[in-house]
Length: 125
Image (cartoon, rainbow, N blue to C red; front, side, top):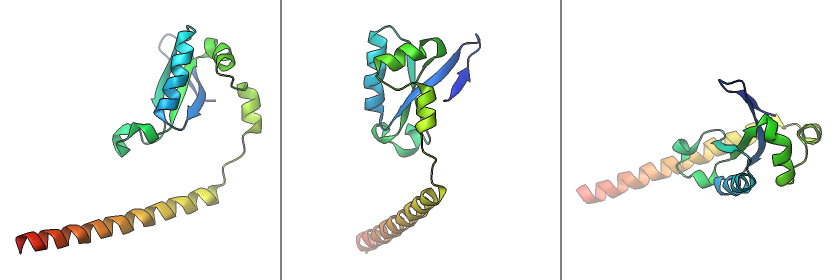
């Protein structure tokens, strides 16, 4: 569970990480309707890097004192149980996916460069 300490000494905790901003905003709206203070933050690259905020994971944070009530409202399991049941990340699979992604990006960039070169060659004639 991620924790952050603010200037006034209050801690925030991460309730859940959602796979998109709209899902996180729906959960935040539900909490705010019940009077629970919460905030959203992008996880990882952030919206400025990829451009589309809809496909970036967002974390839903709340103050530590409101965490239990917020988990009940959203029907999330307690943090202690979630930490025990979470499976470890397989680093080999992650590295394989990263290498594949880099290869795809390089191929697409190469094709785009060739297409642009051909288009400008044809236009400039």
